[in-house]
Length: 437
Image (tube, one colour):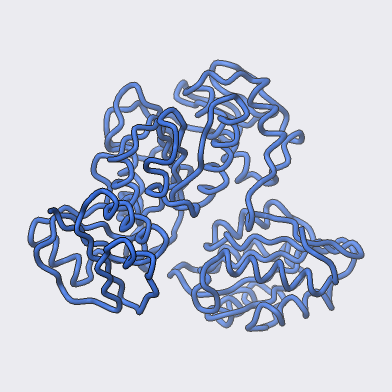
């Protein structure tokens, strides 16, 4: 019997362990922290948590996204010649379904969900999965082979793919993020680029202009503004345009706000036209009916002319800048969290004309405060989310937007960005005295 080692007991690690146990593997599952994994023990998995020492006699390692490649367990396996893969690579080996891969610094989840929604609206069953929360391995043996799988791929997951071959692959954008893990923009970009590695000439590859696309797929681009090149597959001037079908819909007819969402929409529209021949009318109708994604510019409350927006998924500076672009007037910004190694100067510069006052929380509160004060932006170091909401609400006047766009990871005070957004939603609901949207 072959032995698999699962390193990391998050959602994807647990799902991978269960899949391999069902498929007859001898499975060892480890985590650096203590973990309650009764559901794994019940299916015969040898759970060792906490555990950090090397393990011998392993035929395959499945590394969870949050696990660095330099830890002793992984380094030992690599030195022994053991194959190390991610959970999405494992799932792809068992799933015959047509797949679409989507990555980028920002917009991954919205675009993933939007592509799945558009496919479904056109009569093609589709499931959004991957980094957005649903492990691909959960789907093995559970979905019809004809169902499209739209896979959100993080740079951490892409570090460990080998044969994963989507029919369309998209890198939406690339800006500084996770530099604490990757060490440089070059290594970060290289991790994103692996999404294209196995594509062939019949596949669709969309990437930012100038991005080096490995493999044999012809690079295509999406463009903010007029079309200027034959490789532009969608563009935004005067409305959404897609190569082959022309004008699709005006931007003011689409519920999604902000320039960053135009990018997401252009990519999604190009994919569904290219892969299933979706018409302009089908794409337009699907875009109008898309409700958006939780924690992404999500309106969670309104009272006396003050609107509360949950953009907890804005876990880096570029994402927070996109949120300010979507709400460019009288913002009371709640920002801060755990550091990802980026500078806050660009956010401070953008805040000069948009942010009435910033209410800063978490580990990076003082660092962000210094950057904002250097640009003469008013700040309050609130430290906790609850106090930030209370202070912003007390200060707000009709027409203000209280925007949670942290520009940071969440792990100093919350389990993840979803937990942060859920707490924001609950605190707003409690303050307004009614259930949130």
